[in-house]
Length: 593
Image (tube, rainbow, N blue to C red; front, side, top):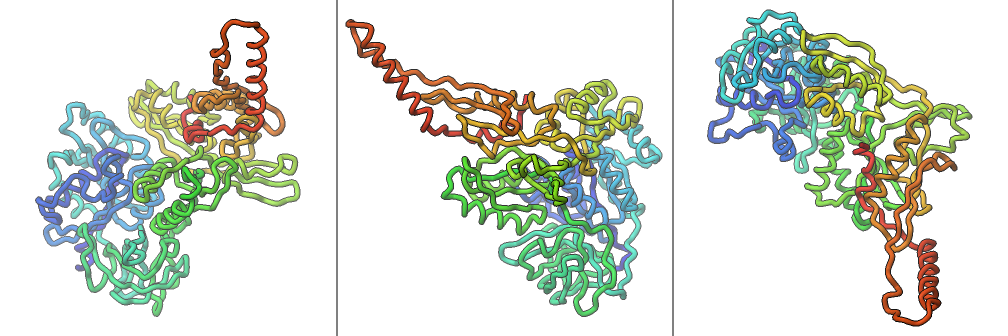
């Protein structure tokens, strides 16, 4: 196909604004998928995506419309996968910006617009769900005009569910989005915008060829990682794999390689030919760094090897997943895994439980901390249990984020109060239109990990939406709070907190533990401590067995003798008795309120 007849575009939107539904209609109208093979969310292949109704993995697909070749990339909407979205935008010349006509502009809409503008894309605004009774087309049109500076008549009005206005979308893609401008004779460069591991074929790359061409059996090199391989097969996705002889400049397709791990071919890397390499690789490559960490432990230690094998297999196809072995006195052997965010963690946990039949205990998620020691050494710790002796620490730095909340103006006060309660700093307040406010703020990531999103939805009656990006690490007065169960320290429960919050959170956690740890035949003490100083305590009272029930009549001293014997036994049990800590105790921080 000649380059002037190729159009590369993606669909960007907030979660649940109708990206995947629109993709379904485009596939239907262009005849890419036959009606009998059509199903809702066709490009969402994972069961989890269908159940949750969200796109987790991006999906490219090639369509033919009139005599044009249209390459579409359906992107995830969640903030955890924003790096994936940014690489997808780099592979395109245009973007369809979908806005729900009933909900209007949301935080992720803004974030994706900024990414699209940074990638210098042509943006086509589309108002979806205009058939809903709650749709407010004039209001949302005004919001989009205010955001993009376009004219109201430039905005397409569609209903992806019923098919209204879909033909007009295709016409605008052909007329408004520019064709690729690659050089077919230059040394080959292709951008990897996604990669995954296939058990039977090796690593499969989704690429956009910028210059040159890649053919079957070509020797290829990944420029950032230096990995070398062979292009065993090249082709396009319709949406299933369809083999081609080669991929030309400007085209989007897949390459099956003989590489054994996605770590060798990361998202954002540049593919070139080994025998005629390009001198410069494509801009924008960066290694994805996880910033949420949690310990994963099997219910029983005998399943540790199965857990380790399962995570190794998962990490082959998810290059953002990083893991190290971990050992806990209470939970035994496990693995500490790094994630891009809480949704990413939730998906990995569900996949491990479903696909590998594992029963897991997951500890409270935490972030990483940078530590400067007195001797000048620098440490990076992923868990509070790894904190060195406080006497040797010069400074502890924690990650801060830049966040944006989009919310109706009536809820601005409640949102600002919520941000301040999380040690956040409100930086700016602006209005998208007469009704919609945009609050910019900075806050420590650790305080937003557990229940910030739930609380935001509560205080804004579900209307608030939230987007963030990592900013920098800042030195704070942080302390490690340890928890003791019956006098024994439980490392897996230790958390890092700001000194001003430690007393309150310590009290909250021990009272939560009191609810989830079952009663024993002896009294169990639950304590929170900073170093050697205890800051909170709760006691779980013992079961009392009535040992005097078999006595009748006689002297009271007989009764006293039996009770004294029982008290002696309880004392001994308290000294040697073991407390079984249930799995819920390790996620007690996820719901602080």
